[in-house]
Image (tube, rainbow, N blue to C red; front, top):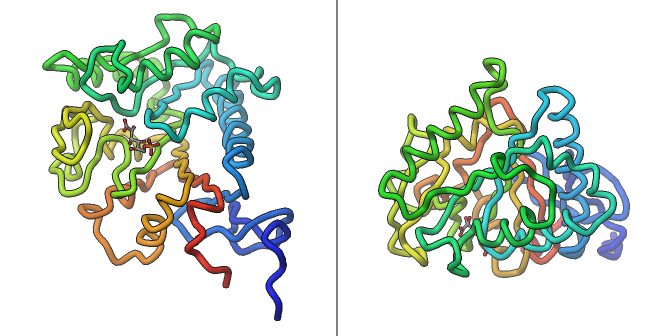
Amino acid sequence: MDQPPPESRRTGNSRPYELAEPSLVGPPLPGEVFVAETVDKVIDLLAAELVVQAVACQRQFGDFELALSGGSTPQPLYDRLMYDPDCRQLPWRRTHLWLVDERCVPPEDERSNFRLIDETIVAHSDIPPEQVHPIPALSETADVEYEAELRKVLEWRQRGQDRLDFVLLGMGADGHTASLFPHHDVLCERGRLVRCVEAASAEPPRRVTMTFPLINAARVVAVLVTGAAKAATIRRIVQGSESIDELPIMGIRPGRGQLKWFLDAAACDAIEPP
Ligand code: 6PG
């Protein structure tokens, strides 16, 4: 039977192999998979999901605990959150904004993750300054300080709800996520929520990162992956023959939460429809 043209194929959404148009076939990754033809369309889906989650959490808990990643991939999402009228419902005044990880550079350094978020979101939203939580990346005890700050804010929540509501992750072509790099002992961390790490393969090598226990406790973990440079890594995850030590992103398995992948066609073009 002939393959239908790509734009009329099915997409991965909560059930990757169900008919739904217009759409693409999503790879069978753990969790829900959302695939769209272009980066712009993936950002549509992710921005809508983020707004829905934020509004629901504000209603249920009175606040929204959001952790964002750096890197280049999420930049169009952050821009979209600021200019798209459909995103205006996002309750920034009730949001606590956290960083998933930070590079140990001064805040004005162009490699600073907080700098990106500060310039694109904080400066253009009405989020109260005391609800913005940059990682004190230049402090020797940054991990201890950031964990204490997280605990202090989250302990206001009812037990069981004292967790991050939405964690946005990216993924490197080597399979790292946050600053959880392959073959690093931080991948075995079971107790601490934040760790300082030194990873020779990273630039800059010194980082501060949320750990698996904190990320995997979140209500929703969204992984945004776009571009052909990541397609081979997505294929390795689907193949499933490698360990978390080799492919740290495979350690993302929210225990009481949802895992959602947001991919453009280029990032998963190696996956053939069934
Ligand atoms: C960082 C990130 C990191 C990032 C990936 C993907 O500070 O480097 O938080 O985990 O998400 O490296 O980066 P790109 O989006 O630039 O490909």
